[in-house]
Length: 90
Image (cartoon, rainbow, N blue to C red):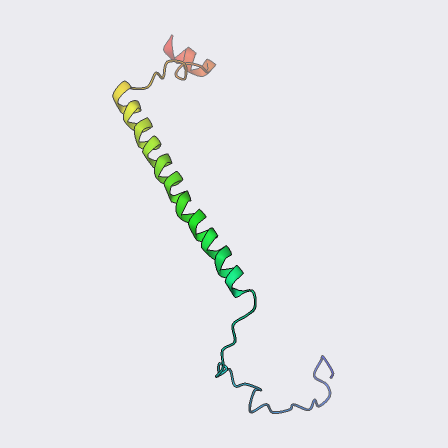
């Protein structure tokens, strides 16, 4: 076939595919399907347990924000640290 299209290429008309994308009538279970399902169930259990970690981190974040709002924040070491800010204070 000429990649530049100079020659005439024969184009075969495909009117039908081998299976026409229809599922097979018979269903045959794979030999290792039970093992595969067991692995998937373990992964699902692990994902569900990670939700507890997210919940714990969310609760910890909430607690930190509450303590910050209740106790305040000491900004003295931050404000006035640069020379320009020290000159402004004088």
